[in-house]
Amino acid sequence: MSLITPFRGIRPQVKFAKKISSPNISYLNNFKFSKDKNFLNILNNPNISYANKIFKELEKNKIIFQDKKDNYYLYKISFKKKYLLGIVGKINLKNYDDKKILGHEETFPERIKKRKQQLIKFNTQISPIYTTYKLNKLSLSTLKKLFKFKPNYEFISNDKCKHELWVIEDKDKQTKVQKYLNKIKKLYICDGHHRLQAMLKSKEKISPMIIAFPDKQVEILDYNRVIQSNLNFKQIHNIISKYFSIKIKKTKKLKKNEIGMYINNTWYIIKYLKKSKDLDITILKKFIIDKILKNKKNIKYVSGIKGDVILKKLVNSGKFNVAFKLNPTNLLQVMSFAEKKKYMPQKSTWFHPKPLDGLILSKVIS
Image (cartoon, rainbow, N blue to C red; front, side, top):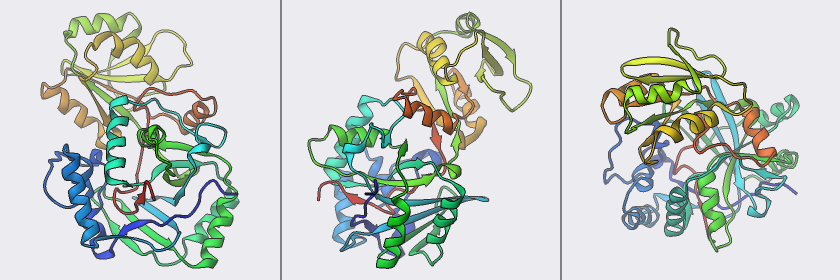
């Protein structure tokens, strides 16, 4: 039996798809909440009741609708010369965190609470949880053949990626998708740990909607930090120098086990003085962040999609006084942590690109 099953998806009418769906807020600059009826404003609205009102209007006006029968959905994301081929379906929560569906990252309790409130209020999962699986060359060839017909949806979104969605209603095509999925024996959660934990903490019987991408196509970007510490430059420098070598950065690219640091109008390269098998992000958290940051709210996580310029800009603005740039976490490391049931620090990985919010949805409680 397949880990991934078909479901009755909710989706927008084609003519409204581009307008109401949205990329993750991290892809956008200077987002400000508005009254526009799209999922960017729904998910980021501080007033969940008002957000739910907007969502219900989309349903009432039939801008979004639910399919009448169970389907699989194919989802392709193209970015520059790269692409990801995903299959959207549902999973059984009973298979999570055992030998079939594995997570890798620690979570924030307050974010789990917020996701739980949204899920229950909307009774809808707005976008699929991002997962991956191991793939061989023969299977990749089979996967590509599944996408060899015209998609139902096709447009370029605000993340500058091309998004295509296929609704698999034909029985013969469904059989081919099912046959392919039967070969997937293990799924790794990449992005969506907070939503998954929110579902686990709910008393309702929920089957999460996921999207499965092959590991060979998945890309991880750096996930960086900017901090507002109550310590000055000299104090921070003294603490870091106990555990790290500190040199002025002369090249743009970081080598393995190097961390970039921007402080006092200068970029530095810092490197842990001891040999360690720990991840760079773990070392950074343990020997720097936990020592120079008293208020855990004074930290901002910045995706590598925005480049180094944004880190410098945030520090120069005065809102933060130090930034740390990391090398991307390796997918093999992610899988290894998941296999061993170990967890990386929160926000260790940024998977790019991502499915849109609001292009394919599912009911939480049927």
